[in-house]
Image (cartoon, rainbow, N blue to C red; front, side, top):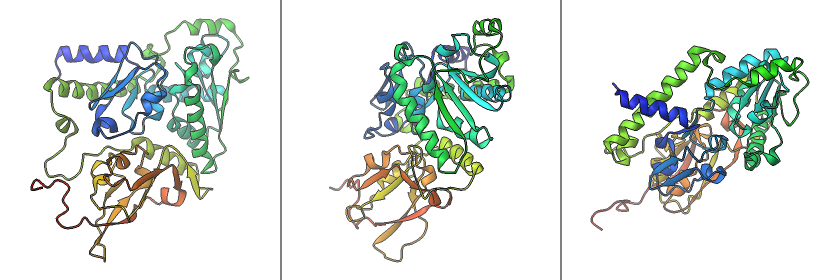
Length: 387
């Protein structure tokens, strides 16, 4: 059982951090050779640091824009302002009142007190938006998704604009690939259905603390989200106190031959939403969510380092025996590939490439593709102590 000090430390972390880290999901923590720094690249507040297998966020510097959450390929960054479940529930509550439209506004726009607060949801910045929520809305027949922001040119979050545009473009590509009729609109004006009729209503609502009044959300949803967050964070705190090695933190077992894997939860949720929308209408899709791998078999030595370090098990050793004794099979799943590029960074021969164009037929096939690569030559062991 966690001690009282553990609980106090955890609650303090949740109250002061807009983003909580899950280091064991970060590819740069899992392998120092990883070149992934997407969260750092998109963070205009310089609040994120990755060094020596450690992922840290300076809560004092973080401005809670949420851009890092959308670009992290393995969901190593978890939002708390608002939590994913809270935002989804809030949107679900407002859609019927907004005549079927999902309207999500930045906090600056909400502060103008010109929109009906019962008809839109609020995030600190539209950088907090992710493709998963927008695809899920489209899968639930919400065909009008409106993102409303203030005057970004004078906002403290203005450097987040390119990241917001990237997320919107990415979500549109996912929806267009399955023929969705949903429209994602980004605007600086309230849609007519949200414009307030009684100014007193908007002024009164603007004074509430949107993210701390538990009554605004379904208590069971908020409770389950908070409990999961607390339990996950407590595990991290306990690991840190025990000063375990990275190998212990990741749960590496002796003789396993592969690093422990994580679920590509966001990928699977997005794919499920796309499948509910309809059949693919395009042969290929350019996306940052899913990925494909290309291996130069002429250069490949068959060392299987790519398989060992793939965090989501998108690449794994094949079960089938190749008819050629000098060849072997790898299995690759497009749906599980998050474009983290750790396989490329771990590749000793630099014979791999991860590409952002995927086959829609393969994506929806749910069966792995077999890739032929050479078997490692006898005596050419990766770690030979006799050398």
